[in-house]
Length: 116
Image 1 (cartoon, rainbow, N blue to C red):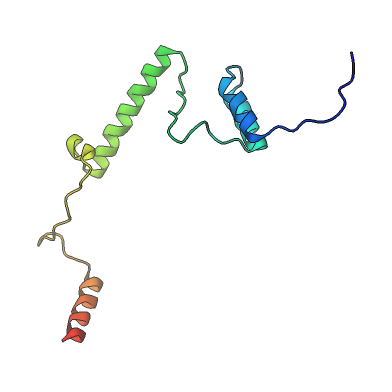
Image 2: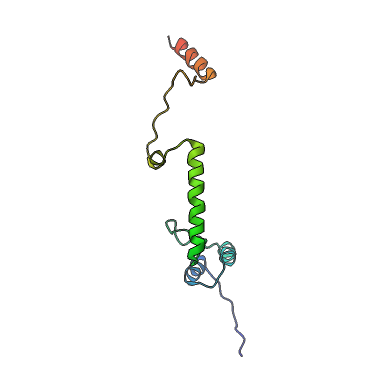
């Protein structure tokens, strides 16, 4: 076998292209290569890899866990299912039951008095 004379340089683009085609690397190996050569993720809009891979049973279990966590989060924050999906949140309304911040009210009164 002949010895290779000279050197070659890998660019981040070449590493990125090779990693996109590769299917044999583990997640840790891919991460190490990306960090070592400065190759970022395939694209900003690329979907995240699934933790379950091709295992349908594991995917079902993870989905159930995710649904339970979402339900617990909504219960903790007081959101309803429809309110969680709305992009516009209703503005906070001051009521007699929920007194405003006393320090804020004091500052607002002082500024109004100063304005007069």
